[in-house]
Length: 98
Image (tube, rainbow, N blue to C red; front, side, top):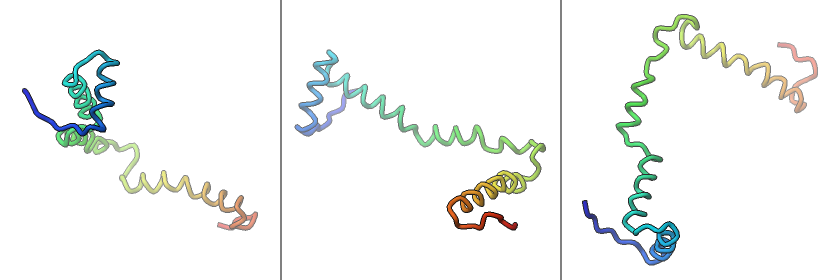
C-alpha cells in the first residue's frame, strides 16, 4: 500500500544519510521505523490479551490463604527493616520498644 507522508527538512537530511549508510531506500527505512515502533508499543488488544492471560491466576491457590492476608504478611516483613533504618538515622532510640 502506498502512503504519502511529509518529512520535515531537518529530519530528511539525517534520514538520507542513514539510508545511504544502510544501503536502503527511504521507504525501507520508514518501514523499519514503523516496525520498531509497533514492537515497542503493543496495541491495546495485545495488552488486554496479556492481562487476560494472567487475570485470576492465583484464584485456585490455597497455600497463601486470603489475598489480603498474604499482602499483610509480606508487607509486615518491611516493618523491622523500616525501624532499623530509622534507628540508624537516629530517629529512634537504640533500644526500640515495640
